[in-house]
Every structure is written in C-alpha cells, then in structure tokens.
Length: 262
Ligand code: PGA
Image (cartoon, rainbow, N blue to C red; front, side, top):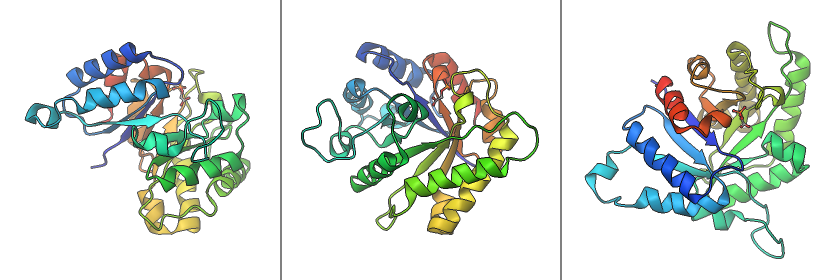
C-alpha cells in the first residue's frame, strides 16, 4: 500500500508560539497515520519546532508517535558570504530534511528563474537536503487529456531545472506540480488530469535519469487541496502526495487531510 507524502506549506505565517501549538495539537490528534508528514515552516520557527520534536525522543511514548519531518521554504544557492538576509543550505541542514524550491510565488513575486532554481537544487543536494521542486503550468479548463502545449512547457521547466543534477550519492528529489491558477483560488485541478501530468513528469525523469530515479521521485499535487478533495488525488497511481497551502494553517483541517489519505 502506498504511503502518501503530505507536505504543509505554511508560507509567511505562524510565530514560534503558533507553530508549537500547531505541532502539539497535530501530534495529539494524529497518533499513527499511514502518511509521511512534512511541515515547511518559516526559517524563524524551524529551530523551535526541531526542539519540540526532539523533546523526550528517548522515551517509548515519543518513539511511537507519528513522525513529522521539517522543511524550509527557500534557500540561497551560495554556501555563505555577503548575501544579507539570505539563508544557505548548510545552515538549513541542521534544522530541516526538505526544502521547497521554485514555488510559484517565489517565481512570480521574487522573479526566481529556472536557472536560480537549478543552482538551489544543486546546493540542497550538496548537503543532503531533499528538494521539493515546484513546477507549474496552466492546465486550462478544457476536458480531456493534457495538451501538448502544457507538456512542452513542463518538459522545458524540468530540463532547465534538472539537467546536470546528479543522484550518484543517493540524493533524493520530490516534485510538486502546481498549476498557478489552482493555487489559493479554490479551483483545484481535476485529479485525473493531474495523474496524467504526473505520468508525463515521470516519463521525463525516466528519460533524463533512468527508471530507478523516476520511480523513487515522489510526485505531489498542490493547489487548493482540502479535506474534501485530498483523497481523490492520492488514490491515483502516479500521484504520491500533496502540497497543501492555506488548508495546512488550520490544524484540524490538516489532520483531516492526513487522515483522509490513509
Ligand atoms: P493552496 O496553496 O493550498 O493555498 O492553494 C498551495 C501552495 O501554494 O503550495
């Protein structure tokens, strides 16, 4: 049975106290989920969340709890230096397991290019972080299969972001497919079409990196996911999990999403 990967993207929300209350409540409500859960939190709360997760880790009660992994939402591709206000991969490695790279808001609001994103993936891999590469194209409203235009644009994004990335030392990759018109709009994309897009992405990965990497790379859907539609996505063969934005800010709704995916 597949174990879905459910990633919360908190974006620019939550102070330390909000984040700790969320985590405590989440762990109280979810004892054993058949899902891997990742919280992509602001840089400022990662340290406190990590401390909270490690608290009492030698006790059996804590070991039996649902594991929760931490993720960041961005990084700078340089290891260090005169980059005021930025955070590097070596700094994050002490705090997180995953890092979102190339989210649609970063591309749109902060003008991140595929070339920046490529460098960020290399930087994350260099320290053993798992990048969650976000890609997206407008899927459009037409029923039926995904158009060759969408496929071409996606193929271009994947090639720009991933060409030259090495998996030789066991590096891992997750890809989140998020159509920009589905993010924060309440217009979640059709699950069947997303399954088709994920199949297409996997075929591209197969051509670029071979069958093993294509099979091991988790493919997520993101865009207006909530507890009513979550299960429809993960039931599809090619969709390994979800990237959840606004619905991940309400702990009870997020718990419903995680539980609905088991
Ligand atoms: P949303 O955001 O769930 O609020 O649509 C998803 C995302 O931006 O990753």
